[in-house]
Image (cartoon, rainbow, N blue to C red; front, side, top):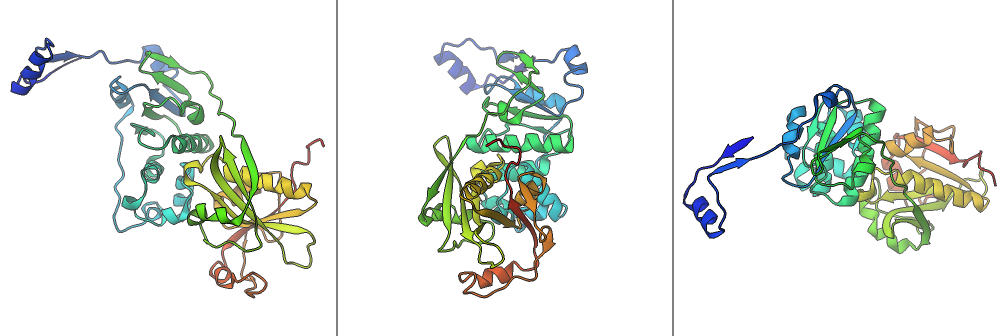
Length: 358
């Protein structure tokens, strides 16, 4: 393929002073998929990835699968209001690992680069789409967590023929595409990709560290003065926080409940919240305690519904109009409890892995 530019004064002068012989014509040799690949590997797939350095022909190759469609955002509307309904917003935003409910209620233009990328992708995500420069302008931890969340969503919803292009190779194992075309080598590969293990270290901490996480909690910035607190680190990076409280009920002895759970935004979508909650459940059981979780967060609640490590209580999946609001009983949180009355609540007891050999 050849392109020609006008030999104007500036172009000619640069060519002269750089001693670069140039007649105005540049020849490109773009990559092409073979006829066999088009009828086999590229015929019916979930996710494909075109990867390679800048200027290697990724965008040109991507256009063979279609044109990217950029969603429009209203400055006076929340992110969530741009979706069909509440369920659609929850499903799609969760699909890209964007689980910060406060951010859902903000307009697009005030979000961080990483949040804007996820919000934009949440609206684009469907069968037969193309996305150029996938994860190119965001933090690499955000890129990995978003890629992982998308991979799970595509498989769960059986989406087809989604193609991304990126200059970053670090997302391949997290995205787990059906095929990868490397524009640097010109090779198409279809081998399976295994997601790297996420090894968390769970450590006890003081309540002071809550200030690092409080702005990201989806319901309340406060923490109970009697809370026991833990942090989660991954590769020596702080990623999550979880606290627990002794339950005041006279009918349950030595029982504790999860109190505040926050996963920092750049690490959402990797399943860290569920793993941290499970880990604290194991800690409490090892101490001879019972451990409960009540949440209105749909992602965490649905995880507990699916997991064999959690058992739903009689209050699971129903609205709770019966919250008592005695300040002395709930440590001064009466106003917050009243605000959350009548929400559908997930309620579970952690029972651990019954098949584990001790």
